[in-house]
Amino acid sequence: MMTTTDILRLVRRWWWILLILPILFGSIAYGISLQMSEVYRARTTIMIEENRTAGASQYSDILADERRTETFSRLIEARPVLQEAAAQAGIPLTPTQLRQKVNVAPVRNTQLLTISVSDMSPARASTLANAIAEVFISQRTAMAVETSGTELDAVRGQIVTLRDRIAESALQVDELLARPDANSASIETAVSDLRATISQLETQRDVLLEEETRLAIGNIDSGSSLSIVEMSSPPANPVSPRITLNTIIGAIIGVVVAAGVVMFLGYLDDTVKTSEDIERLTESTAVGAIPALRSKEGLEPIQFPRSPASEAYRALRTNLQFASLGRNLKSLVVTSPRPGDGKTTTISNLATVLAQGGQRVILVDADLRKPRLHKVFAGLTNRTGLTNLLLADVHVDLNPLLQLTEVPNLRVLTTGPLPPNPADVLNSKRMKDVIEQLEAAADVILIDAPPMAVSDALIIASLVDGVMLVTSGGRTRSAELVSVVDALGRSGTKLTGVLINRVKLQGESYYYYQSYYTSDADPPTGAGGNGTQVSGNGRDKRRLPTAFGRKSS
Image (cartoon, rainbow, N blue to C red):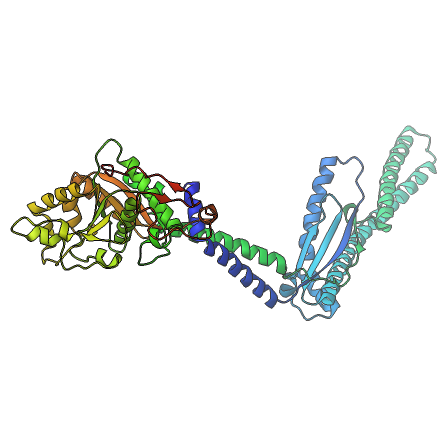
């Protein structure tokens, strides 16, 4: 799982992706929005008026209203309404085409329905919205009138039938009362029954008369009536495209995509970049981090003593001092997982700051495959050197082979003639004797070994007090570093520490290095070579303690 530090590191490394992709996606969304046709939306509002039925419950009313609203919404979008509305508006659209432009929605907590029509023409959108509302109300009214007329005819027919029966019963009563035996019990009973029947028929007639009156005055459609409360007018502003909103959404999508790309790159990138990576992979301390040099081929502490890289080399010197506490560390091999990590440049500059600190330093080029130390220091040759000591049949004096450099207290032993079998030459018994001679002649011995891609470094590492690995920030892969550390561990070699080369200075660190020194002039070339060191503020400091090994005599 990525930590906050990992995420910040990814942001610092891939910030340009996080910047470019949102701008790119936002620009694309902006360009597409400009190419889109403008769409206008017109709204017409209709009201559904309710006449509640006496005795109905509130829940029933609410449920009926919801169902009625949903029903009307569906009916407005039905083919008969849309087809007649298009014909009435004089716009050649099929019901299917018009349905794609129409949206019907109830207004929450009201008795209102809005009919919205979207079109590239504001006038046409308004005309269609009004036409749909008018056609729907007209069709609903006609349907209600038709239904009401059928019911009214039926009620009137029933009223006529009841009146005929009432009249017939009344006639029978009159006939019975006109008879001579009208006072007899049987006649009186028959009259009484007929009058009861007449009374019932009259009651039914009165009910039907009330129903006739209700239907006649147009109280129809289960107590509902429709009316337009707000006609639409041509809208002044389009509803789409929303250029600003689309651009913002595009930029947000760009941010999300950029974040995904950066996280994916971070997942694929398993290179070593920070001291936390070193400690996590090797369980060893990162002894330093060196930024890019201003002096590409020369010695940074001499040419640019106030540069961030020079300060980093001095910090490396101090860190090595602490790393060697409790043990005698006179000889140190510097190697790297692969060629090009900067081990030769690192060991040259480290030797320089150690010599400037007052220690006697011998720098040995043990890379018998591609030697480079004689090219770093001016005036050196590679005619004689280490191989002369290793291949000689008799004892060879060391001192004539040590070449002086422009840095006081620093001497270099180059490789000399290159043998065809470097590993065998380095693995000879003479190599240990040579290292002992070198240790007797100086306070610190720094040996530039080939990369760990070949076995030379492991051979030399078994003969010295410690090994420092140089990794290249953002280049050395985690698996390479772990493999090299495991190889050193199997050989029994003590890993003194790992250095990260070519790290990128961030804003605060760069400001610190630039602002800490206040003097306009750099200290003299080779400052500190006489046992003192000139600090950035111009004040002399006393001789520095030895970083490791014996103190200078």
